Image 1 (cartoon, one colour):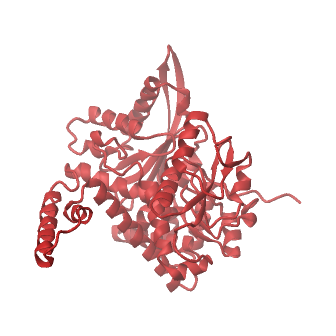
Image 2 (cartoon, rainbow, N blue to C red):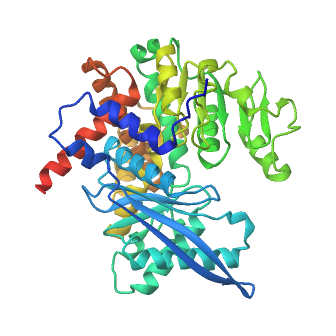
Image 3 (cartoon, rainbow, N blue to C red):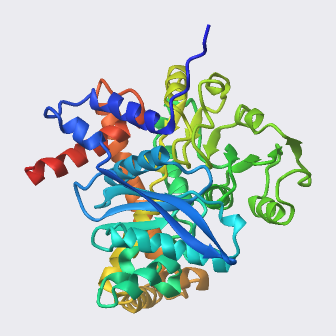
Length: 471
């Protein structure tokens, strides 16, 4: 008997959307309007490198323009393709709606392995790609605002921002054409860690609700919970670092390209990351057991499994053997639609990517606001807060006739800086989003998992946007 083909990433996103739409009573045609990717632009361009021309192909998809600008990262990856870009753009639309960030969804990609080029050539390629997108208003602070994604970072965003501002020197909001820039080039503190920090805040919020923990048959807090992380890139490393260092969780397994390592006593993620940088993989990492099969590590017993790398790592071939009672989707689309159905029947609780991966776009929103306002967060109120804190300390010391301990005094006096405010805003956004998701889950009889609940939250928000447009 021929085995059924696994759904693609885009098919999975659409099927999960369709499942959620069935629980709602939308006007005829509106569900299809929300689901449809509005436009996809494909570009091919040549760049002269080392005396010869090379041709590159890239995409920028705009999924929904129910609110402008649209938002979404640009990835540099050899595996990039148009269908993936469309799926990621759709997911961005839903993410923004779930965390109440006023953006539509977009996504971009360049089919390239950035490691194959030196910095000079990569800058030429990036600036040329940016130029092609800018010509079509697909990089524009008012219409379409990219950000870093797989294979890109602060450096590439700085190149794109500079390219735009050179083309439009009179555009006062030009710096806001991209987010994820270096702080000295209009970026915001906390953006690099934002997606991983959002994963931490989302998991923390789940653990604040005993009723939700019962669904996963988990008891107690995050302290000493055993976690396996797949992918120690920017998102996976930050999430694992914060959960272990700040919440007391234990990272017992890490899966990388060359295999996986395991230690019941726990792994120091900083040491592992440094080892990967020096050795190109995790094999032979001290005081751990190694297996070449990352798949085997995915199926190992733990309290929380965090897939933080690529799409489709949990699929119909392995879903039944996943033992983790809680899966926290730090990556985009790590669980296929077929796997999701299997896991739901098993009772596995999934914190979905459309919610848990939204930390990056939330802090990108803060950066975009900062660029448009042209003022650093905290600049107006920080010293005022310090004065109020000092007054509180002086009042306490007068009333108690005793000195306030220095460590407590410093905490009371110190005013919030930009990083404090960014983290506070991200925490608040993730908490509010989770509150709406769980309220939807518990209030709607035809919604039986958090993923469907998150999509319902998104669809309701987007539907209001389209209905108010009176098209």
